[in-house]
Image (tube, rainbow, N blue to C red):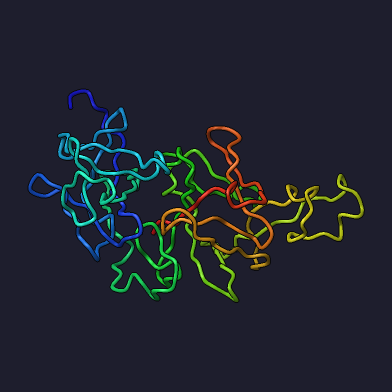
Amino acid sequence: MDGEDLDRAFYFIVTGQYTAVRHDDNDFVLHSDTHHICGSLFYLSDNEENIIYNCAYVGHLTSHPNYRDDVFYICRESQYLSREGLWTDNIVDALHVQLDPELDPNGDVHPDQPLFNPIVSASNPNSADGIDLYHPDKWFALYPIIGDCLWSGNADEFESKLFFGGEAYSVGIPFRLSKNEGKIQIRSMDGKFLTVLPPDSFGFLGEEFRQHNALSRCLRCMHSYSVGFHSKPQDCFTLIPRGLPSMFALHDGAYYYRIDVLKSSYADLVRVEQIEEASLFQFVG
């Protein structure tokens, strides 16, 4: 324990559940119907494996094989914390957890407001922390699942275009979601909608491409469109469930989207044809 920097504070998210994880009486305890940041504040060791609470090692993390460094199991020696909050030898029964970085561990942390009804409708998709994505009282952070966005990957805007930066996802642009005719309207706090933006110019493509739009199946101009913000919800998205229950692929009616990391502090979205090529995303409330 000596020598740890204690600079990676976090709260546990129980994937797809409105549940807090606390450490009481020398053990992990699951508190259902509780916002995840009402749980205990933990720290990740410098080797990013051991879980630290109250200046002591209390367990370690093991990455989920399909979502390495994004989804974890809580372990103690050779056992896993189960979905019932007990210890088990069987990984099939293990609880799926994720981490929500706390950038100001000495601050006064609490949910924006208590949610007595985190689920508006059982048919609606949920956030990673078990909140209805169409909840009228919640804003969400967008979290790209690409294996290295825990401490980076915040959604941000540059010249009206969406990009992912070098800070924790939790400090990214907050979004509120609603549904209209089967399409998802994703709105930022300044009232702009996430949409497909046309090319700045079609000049380099040729005159015939001026007749195309965002939904045209054209391999020549598909990469000229980008994801960004507009005052009106023009071309909205569909969230295609994929991966764990809170995860989805982004689809605009013609193409899916993949994270393209250009450098450590900047990544944007590129269009791909097959869902197998698409990146996974989720929202965190």
